Length: 77
Length: 355
Image (cartoon, rainbow over all chains, first blue to last red; front, side, top):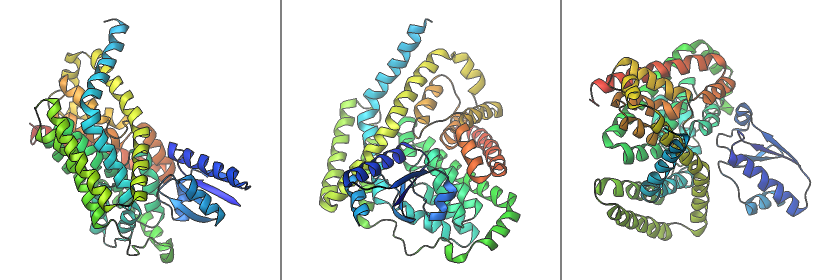
């Protein structure tokens, strides 16, 4: 699994990354987590509102820091 | 003046600020910002901007919609670039880039509480006017590039409105209540004692939360509080640091100096104020206490307006980010255009409406 976090390096984006990592470890999953901070790449995903979470090339959340439960639900689903 | 006295004046400013503004002004402002992020679909607003077909319509939508995208210059760059690379024109993208920080509702309401209604009205009018000129200039300067870009853009990948809904009625009522709760203490009790403000504030807050509990689900309210808390965490430390620095600057700057270089309504004062605003970084809302302090030291109303406009909208880090995302050439047209416009607007307003 490949998880991309789209954000400009703002505090909200850092928090999102932490939540994703925490969810992964709590679920015992392995994944590659990358932080994408080039706004031109955001546009390729059609994302305008950061932070956004992209799992395996699919945009799952955008515009807010997701909660731990939200991320767990997405990872499990 | 000893260094100790200088530090002390920083703390004095902080104390005064916390006592007067945190409860009646900042708490409602942060709640409003959180509510806008939660209940207004920024995604939908941006989609409408991108989908507009005629130039005038896209300019007007970009300028109007930007008021509701509460953001400082750092968070607005991805939104503007998303709009631009998603197929919208260069004009609307740069209008959003300018108006969202220079005239968003959060900053405007807060400016009103500190500097008064006339300054806010002028700030809105000036920001809109500048937005149209900037949008026009960018579209004109890059018209060749725009033509080839429009041909290359795949219509299927283009931003579509998709019947996106910006907000529903209960969201709107909640936002209006919040704006009223924010304005009421500072307008109804203008010169009155502080405890009267607190009473008006408490009534306003009670109305907001009663409505929220009636019309919103627990989950929505929790989401709203989470977003509000984010604003507090991000902006409040910057605001406190800003007020502290303002206190120190106020103690260090001789009044005669401020009156000489930033006083009156001359073209030079306006240009210097614009330059200060365009280079230095002001987080959303920090520009208001800064300008307030400078006015107290003798800054003219026109230069004050120029600084209010360019302060949050432009900064050196912001120029670099724009150059990186949109290209150096666009930054070289955008930034000087705004400096010229800011200077002119400050000068003209200082000699007419704000005299």
